[in-house]
Every structure is written in C-alpha cells, then in structure tokens.
Amino acid sequence: PLTAASLLQFLSRDDIHRLEQYGRNLVEYGLILDVVPMLASLYMSRRMPSVRLSSLQGAILLAVGCQHRTFDEVSQEFNAPASQLLALFNKAMHKLSNHCKTLLEQQVEEEGEAEGLSTRAMKSGQVVQGGAFVKDSLKSEQQVAGQKVNKKLEEKRKELLSTLTEEKFAIAPSTEDFSEALQGSAPSGTVSVKKKRQNDAGAAQQGKKRKSG
Image (spheres, rainbow, N blue to C red):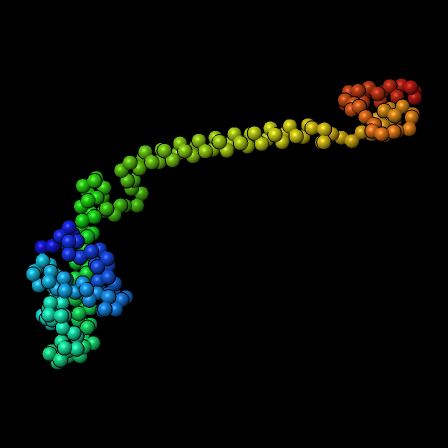
C-alpha cells in the first residue's frame, strides 16, 4: 500500500491539491488531465486498497487514465451520457484525492509525535507542555515593561515641575514694585524689577501700616 513518502514519488503536493479542487468542483477537468494516468495506474495496481470505487467508476478510470480515451468515446461504448460519466468520474477523483490527503496528514502527525508534539485536540483550560514557562516569561516581560513606563512617567513629572518654577511662569510685578524700582524717575530702556519674597512683601506692608498709624 501507498505511504505518504511513496505517494510523493509519483505525485506532488500541487497535484494532490489540484485533485482536491476538482473533487470539490472548483476547477475544470482539463486541469487534472496530466495527473489522471498516474492516479489510475496506482489504483489499478492496488496501491490504494482502502479506496472503494464502483465497477463503472473503475472502468471509466481505466479507459480515461490508462487507455487515454475521451469521454465521448467512453459514452458511446457504455451507451450513457457523457455528463453522467463525468459526474461518476468526479466522485471517483474525490475519493482518491481524500485518500492522498489522509496519507499526507498521517505523515505530519507521525513526524509531530516523533518530535514530542501532539496534534490531538486539547480540552478547554488545558495547558500545553511548557505552558507554565511561557506564562512566567510573559509575566516577567510585562513587569519589566511596566517599570520602564513608570520610570518615563516619573521623569516627565519631574520635568513638568521644574518648568513650573522657571521665570516664564513667575507672577507679574505689582504697581508698587514698579514704583520702587523707578524711584520716582521716568523709565528709559529696560527696567529691572526685583522679585520680593512673600515674607519681604508682608514685612513691607506692615511697615506701611505703622507709618500710616
């Protein structure tokens, strides 16, 4: 019987894909004409014992694939419409392509089991082998990323506080500050106004009150 390795010696994966497409009525018969002779030879040599075709399907496959006869010739010999024979042929190709696809899938499963992998369906909530390590590594990566973000936010906050203390955010001087800076003279050019601290301003106001009292 055929195995996946021996099958690929006669047919390529592209050939099997075209057969599958034809079995689903997605491509025309002309696109698989080059594959039919080899497929018929494999079936007639009983390399596919698990595939069951009817006697008429086997006869059509023999006539078209091995004897290279057209469907018009086969329809005249069997005294049946060509469309009916094509429908039976399509079903036969569908069975053969499914068998080839199954062989390839089994090969993938066997290779996965040999490498310690399993293609079996997992239950809901089940953790794959090595899943705990993946979970822990992702958690640590998220923590490191969070620390970086917090550090950037702290730097932005300090930068914002430092800019608020700059001269451009200082309170504008009052009229009394201007008068004291001018000392009764007319301003010419740039006038420098000395900023007063809150304590100095309070002391000045108290002195004024004492003078007025």
